[in-house]
Length: 108
Length: 526
Image (cartoon, rainbow over all chains, first blue to last red; front, side, top):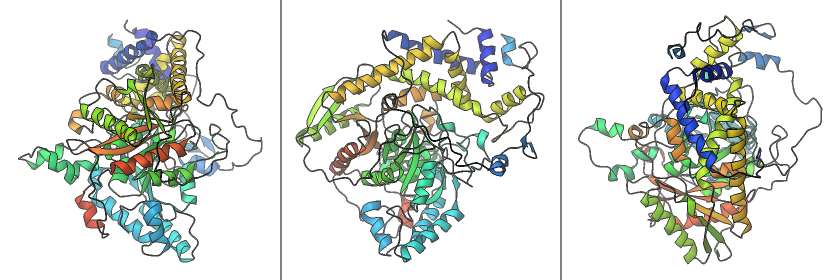
């Protein structure tokens, strides 16, 4: 079954990455087809495995401050900053809807 | 001392006795890097800092206080490890110009042992790929393309232009590191291994590629691909050297809570002579579709080698093998979708000029910064993680992962010590042929034999075994039990000694290496 345009658009919003062209969509279709082979496997009664180290206790260190004070180093790699702030464009503005965006998905 | 020498056996002694100095070694490697530039193995060469480190090492040797075997040894690091003050790009436009503010733990450890960091090696963008062909700095060329052994076997072409296009790939994604070690520009290199990214190029480039047990070596500073499978990989020219590197890198790191807390004791490998107590497992499912008849024959010969030496060789079954690549595909893309979310242009890396809104800036930055492969995996991963797909794909894959890990557990509990399998389906393909198929298809094909070890977190190593009919390296893989690297490497070392893999014959190396060609014209394995 093909992926609907609604889902494709939803994915572009979630990932903040574009399909760019039909080749990108084809890639996704093939990936889904490939992944569908999983359903041939009987996993009744199996617990999902998060980590191969699940039998061990994760290391937790003491809540002591051991490093920090590296504002200058952290800011060095940012392109836009003001004093000790990273500068971002205004938030809470959603990406335009499909009809208003310049995306090849419009033609579908 | 020749550039070809093994660390422990020869170079270390030469440095201690003053027969060669760290500065000389460093300069020779730097010169060789320049003359092998056409391989495109290095993205950044840190010439100044390397020479400075070499000088400091020389001072220590003069005082008779070297830090250890690695003091003064030139090494290279894959460009997805953070290196303080040196650009770290992951071969992506997203991180071009990004200068790390810190050293990855493994890099710091190498520097603390006195190693000389020559530079950062090329890879597939963000370590996604099996050819080292899809990076922002171009593909890496396999040094064996220029070897006497390969040229002798190629059909002679009338135009020199054709010779140019016949170069073969290194495999990936740690192709730059493998090429660097293979062409003698460094003694050892760090790679990373998520689905076979260290072992695959090791096999194609004729070097030793070790994937340690997940949790043994710190991932702090390794730009993550799949948090539950990534490990730093070690590439060297012989198994003993891999043990030396492992000794300096393994152990708990408070900065990586996924490293185990058990004490790690560095070890020297014994020279095994009696293999009668060894049980070698041959998993029948690794006779995968597409496995070349050459490699199949070599695998069989290797099994016979163990049998004739008195070891117990048994056929075993890992029934879910054929699903592990599918499982890997889902889990990998899902974790990638999550890990790549950090690249938004705000705090580091490429930033787009779009400024209407945060979301549009992020979207534009990511559109400009990531290549098709990365974008494709992010989108696939997000698809599998959608609410309506989560159980069907992601959780399902996690269940299949347990089945795969259980398969290995069962086999090792039945008395098998080490598994012997091929590493790749064939020898290295010519670049023009390799790029006919897209990255995802290639990765799915090429990772088949290597990635199950990542699913189960087991240690695995590629040992160069013989040359193919085309004159290119073929390697075989040993997979061991969790945290039993000593046993795994001991077996690998015994095998390495039996097969006597030939030394690559490169014109450039001959010119730079004034040391006598002391290497064996011994009978090669095939």
